[in-house]
Length: 287
Image (cartoon, rainbow, N blue to C red; front, side, top):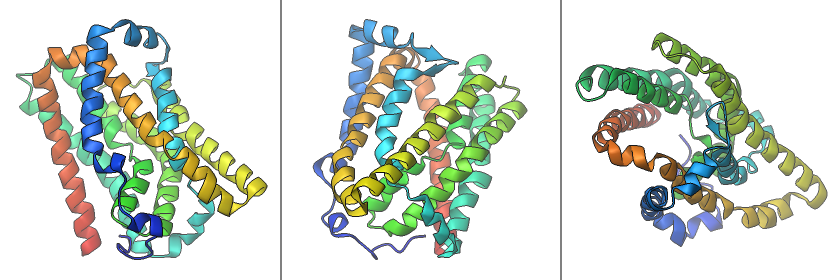
């Protein structure tokens, strides 16, 4: 979809740093640390869980802001003018993200969680897992596209166009898709949760990144912004990622330890969905 190997910046050519190279290890350690924290210092997750609005954790929201802000601050929305460049790649990205992925995620998760695994998961719990899968399927992690593009030495300028376009679409498409799929699943639609999630996880970080970029470039110039400011805030992303994982697993550690079979069963449709979407996008792009 992007010209891999072309337009590679010097920093990209240097390869991955120590943290990126062992990212899987840090994630695994963060998961273990989170579960241990919830088990041996339960006061921490119990205290933080009180700061919740419409079933949305405010501490987690703040950490996610920290994690994705450097990514959002990279987005130059004027790059949307470049949508006419290599339109086939953008058609693939937007079609897979918004017309295929949410619905295949729903179909696969419903088949496994509500039908195949019915003897192993209570119906009420299965509905909650299905709702989580719907939220996951409808939310493309556009910020991480920068990371994958970096690791594959992709075309950074074209990546910007893809991310900017998908973020704009997400502002308007995420909530309707989630509400529709929850509705046909006979799951009560938590309107306040959906609306607050859109504001917290999409609108606020996007607006903060846009305002920061516009303000600082006007004051200090684009060269200072790209070469000084972005390098200073870059480390916030991995720090935010690890702390977020620790906190999430501290909140859910008891559930994970009490339901290990459920974790394995949930992973099956998610893995199938991941490979399916990869082969659809990759095969289409290659064709």
